[in-house]
Length: 402
Ligand code: CS2
Ligand code: MG
Image 1 (spheres, protein in one colour):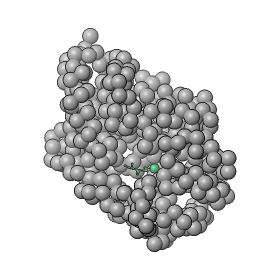
Image 2 (spheres, helix red, strand yellow):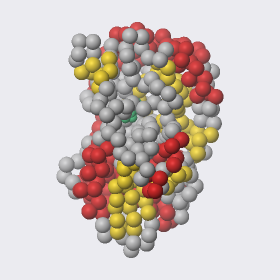
Image 3 (cartoon, rainbow, N blue to C red):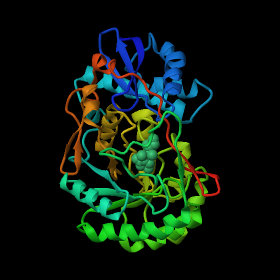
Image 4 (cartoon, rainbow, N blue to C red):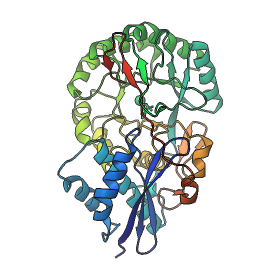
């Protein structure tokens, strides 16, 4: 039996922070796991370094399910994004090792390809509608068949989702930036600009939109109904999902498809949403939801209720997490779509390999394991730099969901 002899946490910042777990076995096999939680990176790094890495030494890396349960049940304090991101990093690294030992890409170990490639959507945004349409055209030019559209709302400085420069990076300041939010201004403007994007796009291109938890259930119902004719692929995070039953109200008023889950981290957080068919797409990610082992259970459960996958894939999930997502996406029966923002060029100096993008689809690497390698020498050149997500306030100063 091979054993784990080292578990190290590595932090780097090629344009943004990434936390990576490196697991090494006595046979000299190295597995890589993503432990990046935007704006809370060091908390997960400490969770791993101080409380998880010492428990891994001497264990059999082949026993993925057992180690997963040891870390989930054994901690007593279960669930939550910190715990589930730490467990995910271990899980991804162990799948990487299993694949390298078996000399197979991870998707083969998960049952093999259920499709030829993974459909992805990318982001298009603009401070105003002409700028958004230009960005939508650029995304089409890169071959994307599904596009998320976000425009700046007039009078709402710092609207969510509008990029500055080529990449959208919301964790932009050493202390949280305060942004302004106005629900009525958004509800007046968004259906109209989404209509302009729909008219601009060929009908076969899917259009998505992210509300980013900003509405009440009733406001979300009103929004969903007002865009029904646009046939959105989905409206994302119409309201926070802390109260799973609140989606019933949205559902009973609109047939606009609903996606949620990017801030959730366990099957228990989405159980009612799925079992009552209150959503159409579940957006948990491998990186923030306990890795491939747990997310596969979530997707298998969702399959029973015709809910599809739509994994969160922002640039604040590292290329290791993205690679893990694409392996899983390849194998499940109820795959829907995968988010793919891409990364600035400099990120590839640290992370080598990974899925290949062509014509609106990602294809996993055929290399054994996850098919992605972390360059420790390159990574050491980029020092951790504290960065926070913004906070939103309404005109009267009240804190709003960001
Ligand atoms: C987003 C993210 O990708 C998405 O749909 O909602 O941009 C999200 O804001 C970030 O991942 C936060 O870290
Ligand atoms: Mg989102």
